[in-house]
Image 1 (cartoon, rainbow, N blue to C red):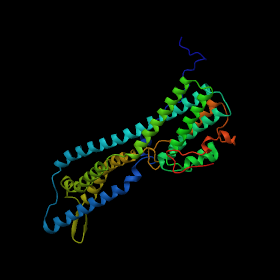
Image 2 (cartoon, rainbow, N blue to C red):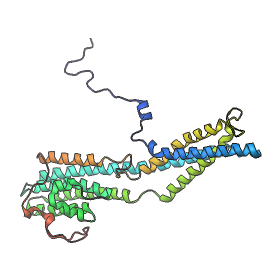
Image 3 (cartoon, helix red, strand yellow):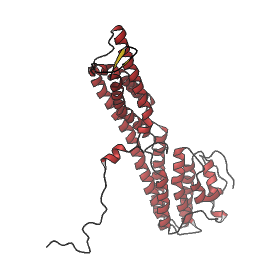
Image 4 (cartoon, rainbow, N blue to C red):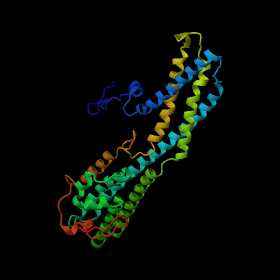
Length: 349
């Protein structure tokens, strides 16, 4: 007898849904809209080549067609170059994702240690966790080259102005976290716990440096230019090779006493079909170079990641919200007179 126990239902998980056609025909999120103009341009070039060939052949009997054999080897080499370019871009994207995974883990760890190792003296825990929750937003803005996001202001109040005015906003928060850990040692933070938290803060700083390295050092520009020129030369000369591959016996139309064969339409269509994967792979390699830029198709969901970190830290601290509240001026360490090495000027609250 093969009956399922009522305590253990046979199938409680939702069914996985997969559709090949939905993925193959999906436009949103693909590079197709961004490469279509270039595809049509190469189709137009092919049309001009075929039209010129048929006019020259009709008037002077000159055949502009070239052998297709060399294009087979050139196409294989070009495909390999594009695969390498795409692979290099994906490596950058994947490294950035791992670095942000480390940022998530280190922020959670710092928040947990702050709550577990330090007594809540004058709101030290809440302030430390609030700074830790603000840090991912500031890192995100720094990687995107912008300032003035609402999240730091919501979490820190007017203190966020000092961070926004600094040349390197994350460095201001890192310095303040270090100062708070030093103050905690003078109170009740054990030296072993201090070293552990400092190590986690250092790892977090390393992750930020890795992200900045990806943003500021794109792939070699000379290599990208050469690949694009290779694609251009291949697609521009391809119509001359395709002239031999189509029959000219079936004339589609006659204009001004000249016969134009169906190749005047078939060759451009074939060139556009060939150009689509080549241009798409080249564009994907470019899109993956900067995974932090929201204008890129496959940019990392940094907004959602930062919100997740804030939610996790809120739960760790055991409060309903980390939003800024007016506190005692003595606890507003960022407002004291300081000359931060990353700041553009001295700030006095």
